[in-house]
Image (cartoon, rainbow, N blue to C red; front, side, top):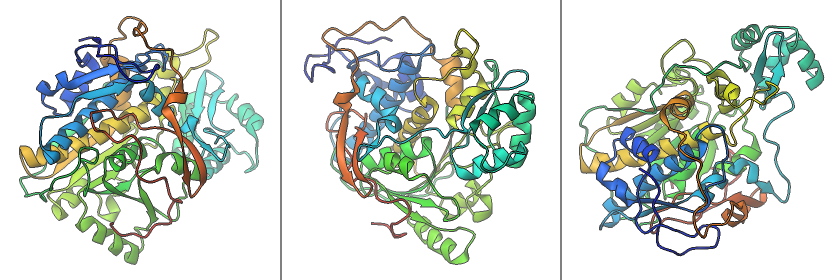
Length: 474
């Protein structure tokens, strides 16, 4: 299916140009993977500039499909709680493009945060290239230590050390030491599912009363055990739609404050040490009345704290549990640490996007992170609706960055070069940014891209300081 013109209206950069909306094939495929009713797809339309995420891979099509699926899932839940038909979905591709690089648009009192640290990036090795991730101090320290470099070694010394070693040797030594480095590989034929869904019984679920169209997740309690981008984007989106989202972090694993300033909108954030019996008891009290748990750690890494899927469903058979990892849930790499940039290197995206001189390339956004985040939020919203309109009981949802990468590489047709829509100006993110006062200072940030009739246009609250909220539900 292809775009069709929508009725005129809106601003000059996002003027709708179609008279009948329709979902494209990636949107339909994402919606089907989430178990969404096919008949709702005719509610979806697109507008705005088509040139915001240029790439050799179909990043634009992935991005707008994930946001469209999330918008439709929000509209579906809104119809259930507010009554009436499912609102029409209108996705502004300019807003999508801005949101997919929200961390790059963020400014804090005029200061632009640095996305990648000096020790993160592509490096030549003796036989190819390797991608490192050393944004967190403990990852940088482990990387330098495994290469026998001093703790204060600079980027030049790192480059010299890496240039003497084969890429896979660097990769395996880093993995064994808890550091992060991945050899740049050719395009992988391995396939991971976009989403894994299963029902976990027929336990009754808590009834939900009426809610306004712009807050379809009002009253939903979400425990957020995620970090970096993908998981926090998902829970930031649930917070936008009215959910009470409480992020839980270990006091022994600090977060980058700039990252939280981008992804902490609408949420609250607290610190609990789940290895401490007193903090664990507080967490279990929160879990007893949670509706949703979202985790973003390696498979098995939270099991010792009672957070294995089977243990959670034994305790709360009505729970919606959404889990996210980097490399997929099975296979030899399932237990490895990973981030978007590393997955791009490991599955062949970096090689596919390489420059003519052979230097590995990158996508125009951390599209695996952001795309997976919107899909995860969509799956949670769909599960909440499905529990109350079809079959009650728990829902187990699993995502991976590798799954989204597989979809991008093998599941989405590039399609013809998108021609500009009549009346739409070239992409300009200015129309999709705003400013908000916060505990961090004056924030310039991207507006949310969720688009359906009656959707919220911004978050109800700015991010608070990371880890400073009380561990209680509102």
